Length: 317
Length: 267
Image (cartoon, rainbow over all chains, first blue to last red; front, side, top):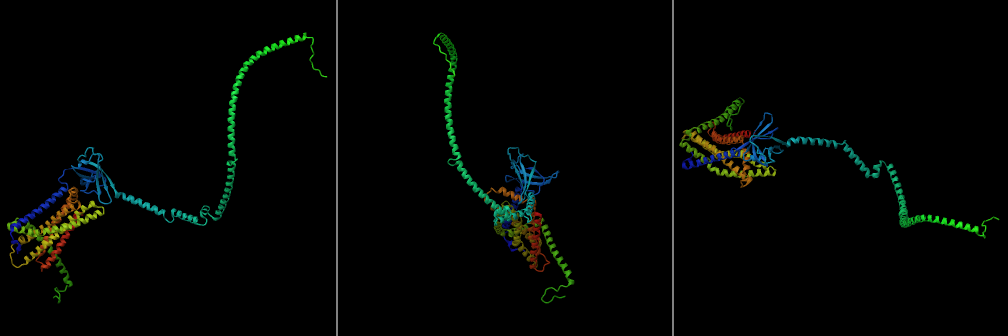
């Protein structure tokens, strides 16, 4: 039995159905074209081959990023004849300008999310990377570091456990510290800790007392010594006065010496004159001797000739 | 042995249990076979040029229009609202966990790849194919009447319309969801288009795209064929039993297709 609605005008219905079909075709075709465009089917690309020891985490279709922007897509992953992983990346021609011969490629595997392929180009003035170039990729794996970190942490925990065990050295040291602090807080105090028992502590105390007394006496001695040395009339003031006097005396002596110098200079002049005079005196003496002799001869002559001569002699009676 | 008073069937005996179970299994398998056979027959008819003669083409186009057009706008609005809510939930949750870079990909994978084909198929079943199956059941069981080539004139147009309805709903809702996802993340700006396109291209790789397309088509065939096959199954005594059986079988087929699609996409 045919549905009664089918008796409505068919031309309009057919047109609407045709439009509906057309809409469906447009939607499907448009979606297909958009997906092809999204997959990069309409852009020209060049090939870049990345060689890695381990391509774990790399998936076909994942992006190669440069400064956070995707510039390539992994097309294929395969094994090379040498056993390394070959990651074939398609890079659009428009984005290949960011890759240079000096570019560095890294594969980083984080804890959250998959691996990421990154490209770094330090010198953009270098020649561009040619099509089909092969480059090694540096691998950074956080998860690979985790076992090492976990192992180190486990070892640290084991060491800490050994360190903090009840029979460990640390526990014994802490026990000793507690005993020591107990003794410090006890009646003996620090003295008891140092000496070890009460008798020795008392001896040490007595020694300290005697030392205190000795120190007191030494204080008195020092005070008296101060007075003797530094007090009025003490050694130091007297010495200072003596030094002052000595200085004055030295000054006088210096002045006297200066006078002596002058006198000596005069004496030297006198001596010089005396020498000269001595020389003259010698001559004069010679002359005087000669004169005296003459006078003597004369006297003698007179005496011989004088009748009133007297004998001058001394006689003992 | 006659039935006891108050019961429909005679009491089961040990000697009768095994043959009854075997007969039930055979009957169950027979139902599946009849469905597959109907699908094959309809596929042959759909590929036959005589099915697109003028009268048949008119019937087919009418069914296409009457099955899809009245519900398209309502389904689009419903899909828009639900998609907006889901996209907002996913994006806000991802941002709150510091995983905003994965929000868009998650929206595309969950909403477009998984939810929308299923909802489109179920909506098409609810609004189109199940009522068609009920109408075919009435017509099939009506005494007398014009039953000249009913498969080509009645069943094929309705089944084809049901398939088209599911495909159309899926296409429209996928496009709407993709547009809403972009607008929710980037707003009315074209700055995010390259990144968005890249994300969509990353999700729809060749394998995923193939599985996605096959899933939509198979969903459409399932929601159109299974209720029709149940309605036309002469082995059922009552129409209600046939409809219920068809619903259960339809959900089972949908579940199998979804499981196979998940295995194909992520296995």
